[in-house]
Image (cartoon, rainbow, N blue to C red; front, side, top):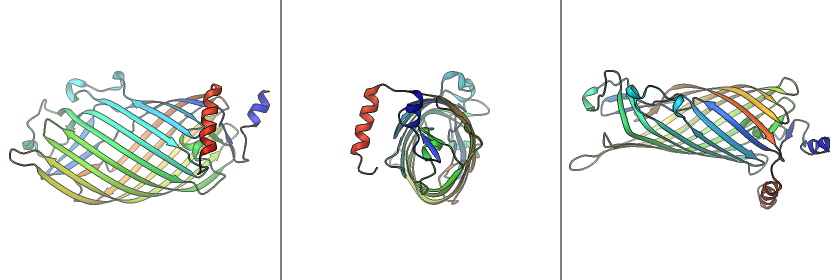
Length: 319
């Protein structure tokens, strides 16, 4: 009975699908964006007072849901840098074997400032090292649409381990990213908004070391354009500054992982290098690197979950 069930998952020489299993995954990463503000001849770095984020992810068939947060024991010195709360929700949809869609909403409340070139514009200096911004909040809405050109390459295996790559393969996977960023700070009566559009041309390759070990590699150059708006409340009227910017970036990824029909896990290192026009008001850190550690377990879900997902898949016109 077991062998018959497992054989039903296999639909390709190159990868094995876990469609009838429910994945539960725990992740730890440091993918928390810091950024630089350059406005009115003042430059400063804005950072959250935490370096790590935990995530819990559940995926089944075509859908992946991930919730991220930062518990208290992962935070830094609150007396020096203030308190920070982190929340992120991520949804991955696989409408067909080739198309993938990601939606993200990220919210961070509580920041501090360091590397300030002009302290005269700030009256919130709370210690000799940092300026605490307890009322500063950022929110990011992001969508990513991806297309996989190689039917023998599993993008699901890379993104959420809902499939297992069984034979080494690679694929050209271009993607289009569209995002809206907003930062509000009631203490400084200032609001920063940014809208970005980026086209990336990625190539992914998975080396299958043996039946259970693998390594993922990818390189993704990108080009885009963004719009920034900075609004500062005044006594008589608001001061509004607009800017547009070209965005050039290159993303890279290398990962090592383990897969079995029940347990899986791995470690991934990512790096992002970004270049902006000098007139840009909001700049993410030009060179960033992230490490993600994950561990997960696959198990058979209740029948009503399978039936519900099967009905959605059967009615999907894009499959």
